[in-house]
Every structure is written in structure tokens, then in C-alpha cells.
Length: 347
Image (cartoon, rainbow, N blue to C red; front, side, top):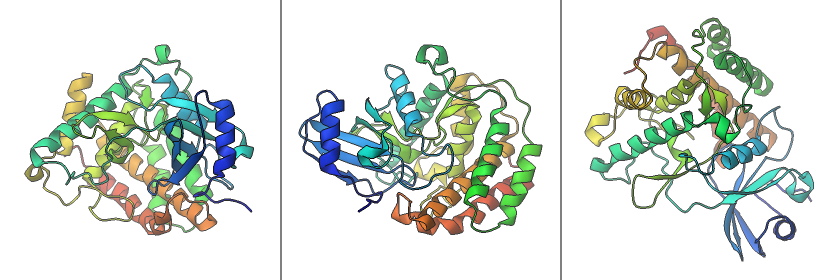
């Protein structure tokens, strides 16, 4: 009998890891983390310790999606840098072990926050958590590509040109309905790409609050996780991606933003303050073309959500919430249209 995304053959996996991973001792118990929409992730409790397993979903997948081997490569390369990541232990590229490729990394015992308003944190301390997110993003963008061996981690050429083409293709491959806003964006974005300024760095691709593990007692990130979408590209793609949370609504299935909140009154920075912190750390005088960067990321997010929804229809989604996301695609796309129409700069 085939196993779904929530099941692992624990006995077979333990036997494999005892042979392939130095120091590993079974038996093991695997429990799936309930959150997350992409690569199924499991907590592995074994005789030798606690670990995390990330796997590709089973079934037919979109080309280039769910690249756990790339995740393993980048967290391996970042060991010893200023970017906090888990410790990678083993990459398995044999589908016969659990049904798809997977890797094992250390379990980082900290706090993950799902609400960007940080209700769990005292108001006077919330700014420090955003400042730490900002600091670590800058650390990612300033990684020495030569020293880490990541000079070939992305394709050459204009990042936004490549990415608009890629996500248009991914969206079309997973499309279940035709949305006017998405059709418009697939035409508008390629025609309005800013002139390439030559900026290139490691980018995370999904840099947001719930992909960061914080120390249990202080505003210190102990691990950046979920590197599936990482590549070499333009650093403003990461910055504008995170800044979407200032514009997204508070209550949406699977996505929560800061849209209706008065940030200063609850101890949070504004979008402009957060961007200014980033620019000061990186020595950037001014950012031009902010509406394009935001619109690009809203489009990209909508395409990603569409892919999750399509996997849910096909029975391959990682999260039980995936079925709820289909209705969000046109909503997110409309945010891109609104940004374009208003020509909004950093606010």
C-alpha cells in the first residue's frame, strides 16, 4: 500500500539512516509538522537524538519544484557564515527509501512566530525582533559567493526576467481557472522590468517570519529554514517579498499580514522604517521602482499559491489548509494590480 505525505516507513528509514548517517541510532518516531505548504517536514525522534527530515512530496511534480537537494546544498555552504542555519547531516536521492528524495538536518529548538504582529512578545520588544529579521536578511545578501562555493547557484542574466518567465510557466502548468488579473500581470511584468543594475547575491526566496526560528528567550534568530526557493538573484526581491506583509490583510487562509494595523501603536516598524534599516546596513542611498518589485512578488506569491492548490486537488499537498488557498489567487493578484495602478512607493 502506498503512503501519503503524512506517513513514513519508520522501520525502513531507521535501518537506512543507521547505515548511511554516522552516529545515527534507531528506532525512530516520525511526526509531521502540520504547517507549511511545500516540502513535507517531519520531526524525527531517535535513540541518538532529534532531527528534522524534509522530503519532496510524492506524485507528479512541476519541473524544478521541491528541490530538496538545493536546500541541502545551500545550508551546507552556509555553515560557518553569519547566516544561522541548521546543521545538514544527510541527503538521500534514492526514491526507494521513503518514496522521494529527502534530507536530514538538526532540530533547532526555538520559537516560530506565525503572526507578524507578534502578540506573544511584549510591545516594547517587538521592534527588536524585526530588527533581527532585517539584520539576518542583510547577512544573506552579503554572503561571499566565492568562499561558499555558490557562484553557480543561479542562472546568469536579469533575475526578474528569468523569474517572471519561470513563474508564468509554473502558473500556467497548475492553472485551474482563468483570472484576469493574473493574465494582465503575465503581460505587464515582462514589459516593465527595471534596468539591470548588476546587483546579485544569494537570496532566500521565501524570507518571512514563519521561516525563521528564534531563540526561546531573546530576539536572536538561530536558524533560517525552508531554502527551497533560494537562488542567486537581485536582493531587492527578498526585501520587497517580506514587505508584502505590511500590505496583506490580517485574516486570510494560510497568509496573515499587517494590513489594517497601526504599526507604531503596537511597537512595529513601518514599511519605510524597515526598508531604511536595510538600506543603511547595505549602504544603499535610494530604491527606485518599488511598485514593480512589490507587484512582481504579489504575482509570484499568487503563482505559488496556485501550485499549492493544484497539488491539493491532485492529493499531493503537504498541508490540510491547501484546499482553502484557491480563492486567494485572484485576491493576491489584485494587490499587484492595485500597487501598479497607484504607483505606490515605499510607505
